[in-house]
Image: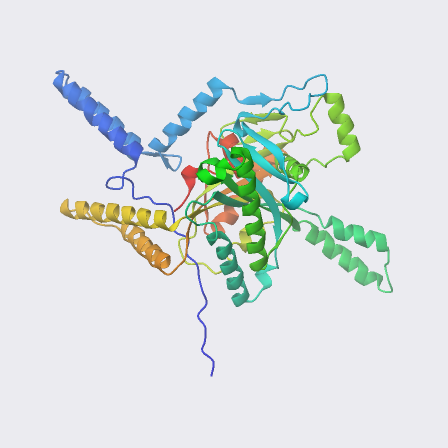
Length: 498
């Protein structure tokens, strides 16, 4: 007699919203402190009571009043950042095209949101094929990429789905080590309408109606209906190593650049072995040309790539370096950014499903048809000692807040209790041998016009709500958000859930 097996579910905890004191964030505490200080100074100076109370009322309004679904204090850094951007470098950036061929070794121009990045080529293992990587000169990181595919996850049995997810967890766990060179990984899925072009081309080549013309006509009608919902998915997986993660012994052997190259090569080899063990199919690490092609596809997915000879002649006439892969024009506004011929709008996943979900819970959102969008998840494996220290710190903070609220006669709400229980569950998982992974999700909707962008953004937001995702538009920082969603190793550290 067999034992019935319980179906496994998964819970994605939201960001820590407990604040630093009684549920208040750093900015809120600063605003309230400044308001109280201003009120005390006003009373000491002998001003009338209404003038003395005014700073406190303004601080309370900034901390707790809401505009557009967000507290006023959240708008302050966005507004300041937007003003700095507009007054500093302006809303529009365009590459200066020289009238002569670019000299060898001169770096191609990039917009401020991609400043410091360059595509480099590293020597492969044992004299093999060379590996392309994205070198970040400002953050001192090096990022390699592979293209990943896997079995049809949705149609797999429940047990197989759970096995695949466990295998992916093992891939991430191998990088959650002490003194590891890998800072984070990210997978980015670009979905765009396909129109069944490959299948239609295959049918055209055969050009066989067969003995059943009525059935052939019915099949053509079926294809016409399915073409509007068919889409292709290109999944790129990136792994990033940082210079400050290298050990002293590693740095001494050939300098920082060579040491980072070796660390990235080792990480890519380990990633490939882990993906194969998890039942996924991974390509060889992309070379420099493949990385540039991937970047161009994400910048403007609607432009058909020209042939190599034609592209080379055009680049020579315009004076563009053959290795240039960045955008020629970037125009940023409050709610979207335009790069060359494409409009982008990036959302941050502020809240994941609050209830436990099955393995294939994300399938309806990923298979949304008729919309070009990229879904990027940044994953940061956390070493065990850091996890333990963070759990202990957060538990002490929550317990202290609970005691303070009880002493003041305030109620400890359900959100506070759930955050405490989530930390206790995470501690149990850590003791059981499971590694902690911080994560952040970004969704970028891409369209060929601003009107189409508004329409497709509404579709994506509705699909996200149906899947239990809360999308928040990153106002005033669309160029930076779009860059962080690219598979180039730019991780949005301030948005990570841990």
